[in-house]
Image (cartoon, rainbow, N blue to C red; front, side):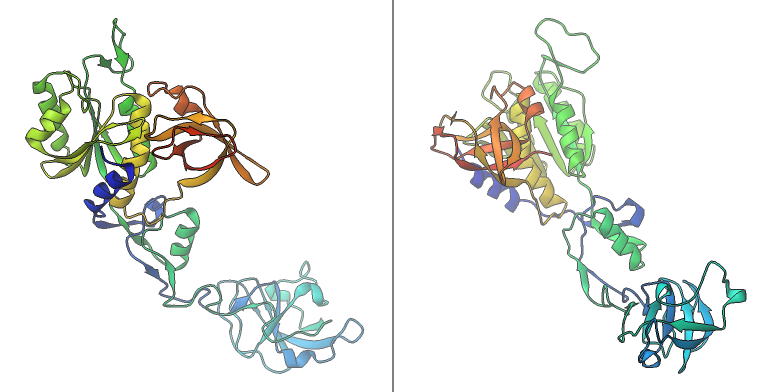
Length: 409
C-alpha cells in the first residue's frame, strides 16, 4: 500500500491548473486569480483632502493660534468630484471636501473645526469671503498624496489568490471591469450499488439512502467546483459501463465515484476503470479510507472513493481537495493547524484521521474525540471540527500530545 504522502504526490504531479477565463468583476467572489495583478494607476490617482476643511499654504499660518488667528481670503469651493478652478495663492484658501482634489499652490488642509467657519449657514452661493485659522500646520497635513495607497505598476495581487470582497474592491478601485481567473472544474459524481436509492424514495429491506453523492456535491461546491451528480448505478457491469459513458459525455474535468473500488464480489468500478483507462493505484495506508483508486478514464482524472460515508468524506479532504485546489490554481490552503489531545487515543498503526471537536483555551487549540470513529458513523463528521492525524506506526497517543489537525469548513 502507498503512504498517504506518496499518494498525494502522485496525484498532484499528474495535474495542472485549468485554463484561465475572463469574467465580470461582479462574478469574481471566491474565484482564483489566474495572473499577477499590477496597478495601472495610482491610488489615489490625485492628491486629495482627507478632511472637510480648507486647502491653503502652510507659510501663511506662521504664528497662528486661537489667540492670534490668521485671516485668509476664501477664493473657491471644491466639492468631491470637481476639479479646482485655479491655484491657491498667498493669503488665500479654498473650501474643500473630503476626497476632493487639492488645488495647485496648496500644501496642507486645515480641518473646519480649527477655523471660525460655520458651514451650517454657508453654501457655495453664500460662501464667507474670509476665514480665520486658529492653528499652524506642517506641509502635507490632512492630505492624501497621489499613490499613497498603491503606485502605478505595483503588484497588488498574486496569481492563486482566492478573491475576497476586499480584493474585488481593490480591482474596482483600479478600474478593472473584468478579471482573469482559473476556470471552475466540472466534476461528475457517480455512485454504484444495488442497495442505494435516492432520497425521497421508500426504503425496502436492505436498502439505504444515497448519502455520498450529496456530501461530495457539497464538498465540490465549497471549493468552487461545478458538481454534476448522476443517478446511482446498479451492481452490474452493463450499468457501471453506462454510468461512465454518461459521465464522460458531460465533458468533466474530473470524475469522482464512491464505492465499487474494494475487493468485494460486486465491486465493479475498478474492473470498468481498467477497461476504459488505467489505474495508478487503488490502496493507501490510512484509516479510514484504505480502498482509494486514482487513475484516468479516457484521459480524464478519476478518483474512486470508498463507499462508507465517513471514508468518502475523509479521503475527499485528504486527496480530492488538494487535487481540486491544483486544478483551480490555488497557491494557499490554510487547512492545517496543531492541536493538543485532551484524552488518550488508539490507532491500528496506519495513518489515522480521527474526528475531533476543537476549542481554544489558554492560547492552545484543544482536541476531543467526537466519540465513535466507525467509518460508517456519519454523525462523527457532523460533530467534527477537524481530522486529527495520528502518524503511521503509532498505536497509542497520550493526552497532552500535540498533533497536526486538518480543519474542516
